Length: 219
Ligand SMILES: *Cc1c(COP(=O)(O)O)cnc(C)c1O
Image 1 (cartoon, rainbow, N blue to C red):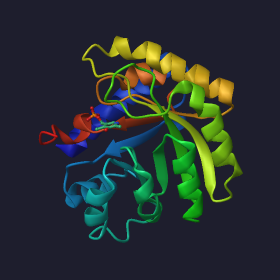
Image 2: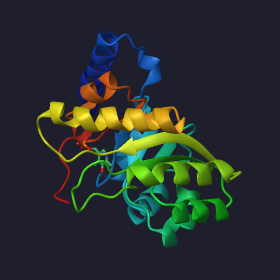
Image 3: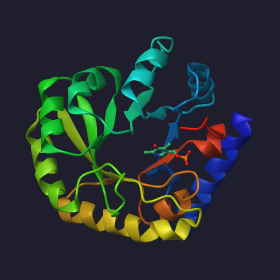
């Protein structure tokens, strides 16, 4: 099942990249494993996946204990991070995609572990969505650049969910413009239903859960 799903996702990524003259190598597939057991990560690793996304520090803390020795695996935090969990997160993840304040950047610096980071940007007016306001992004990026242990990769966003993937496009365009204006390279945008649109708009990271692993238990 996972093997077939992965083949389909790979094909979708390749086709989208080809359509806009990009190479497959420019795009990192981050397999989103939240709510799935550790064995699923092991299976995905065996099929060659190396980037994994988890949403909750505590859930990942438990699962990671049984997942030692996955050489070369890169674990990304893609869910909201509270400042008081920054230190623990810095010990458990390689990449934090959800830095959304200067304060959080400072906490991650204080943890003194080498980390790749992205700034999560909130581009919609939805109440519930996490992320920094676009106007705050330059200050957060500057703060990250001052931190010796942090490496800024780029920006991440999650548009309001809609089954019509085209509705994600304006958000992805804005994220790209913002990255350009801020002088950062990576764009984490696009999920199971809208990864093609993300790639067409320049995504360097797509975060894919359902299309690989099936539906999650209700969140
Ligand atoms: C759950 C999640 C995803 C994956 O979504 P799917 O629709 O299952 O591909 C991607 N990004 C974030 C931030 C998520 O929370």
